[in-house]
Amino acid sequence: MHHARSRLAPLTFRDTEVPAHESPVAKKHVSATAKIAYKVNQDGTPITSLRALFEELDTRTRNTCLIPGTDVTFTKTSIPTDIQRHAFELIGAKIPS
Image (cartoon, rainbow, N blue to C red; front, side, top):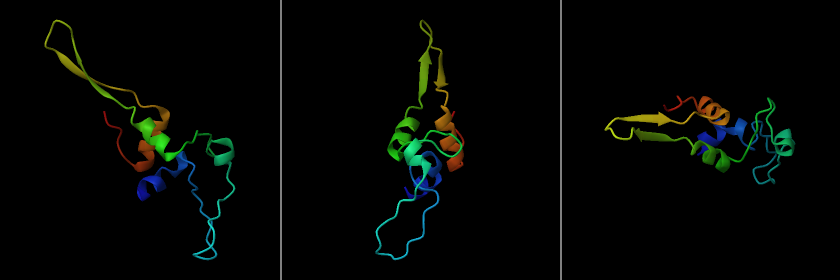
């Protein structure tokens, strides 16, 4: 989960530039970013929570279709959304087809 959170940080509310802690027991400081206020990244990409991003990735489907009156089947995969495509790029994985 640590690696997923780190690599997908540009698409989530997680800070990519975490401020250094003065003390290990000091209260966590949240940096002032436009991510939280405007819900967009610096490049204009919409951002969301990690859970919502996983739910977005979960909408990818692979369907086996049957042509009526025959035994012919074929597989059809949904077209990835821009957010799904960006997430796969960030983790360095090929989009499943």
